Length: 256
Image (cartoon, rainbow, N blue to C red; front, top):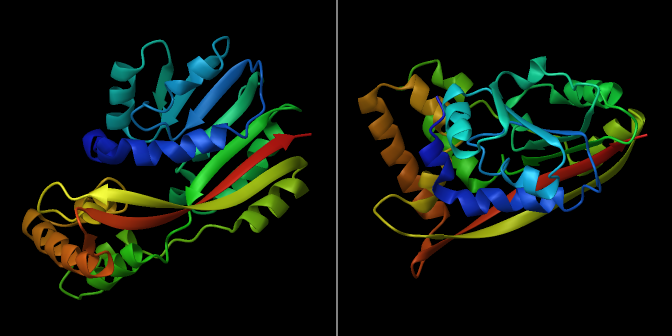
């Protein structure tokens, strides 16, 4: 279960890559725009302002996120569903995926399929985290390796990888697109506001969600404490801030 409140705790930091991604999309008068993995809709809300004549839709696998999006963004159609089952309607000219495809194993096949289904001139733009070997994720895997946890936890923290920008570019060029691909490492300056380490708070909104689903309440409390201790060593507090580098990969493709 996704918690919109936890996810939005660092809404500004999570929103910046979305804006940087859209800045490279050159569509002027798209007929329809779809936000895949729309979450609570706070970023989807910027799409009607960018393209006021377009029909804007959002799709997310979490009913909780979709319910929140419907409350926050009236006038946009939000649907609960799996991106693996989604196909673009004939009038979809812009598809945006913000930090969603990393959750989908084999999403490269989806990208090729969508590129083949979109009309000539349509845009496919997405960004994914590229930080799965960062100290935060290494700490997560180290704590999860303790045999005291249920066996199911191994699947919840299984190492994930995403292609590099060059690999995405080659894939979509072969699929008949022109491609703009790059990576950026953001340095997030996370304030210390309570006893919880800021990087732990960040991870609770995303990477720790599958862990929380597997563990009982007492197990989760212990896991959270142990991970917090490791994160405090990996990301020490400097003044009232924690410096948190975060690598992201961006791709903007246009169908030819």
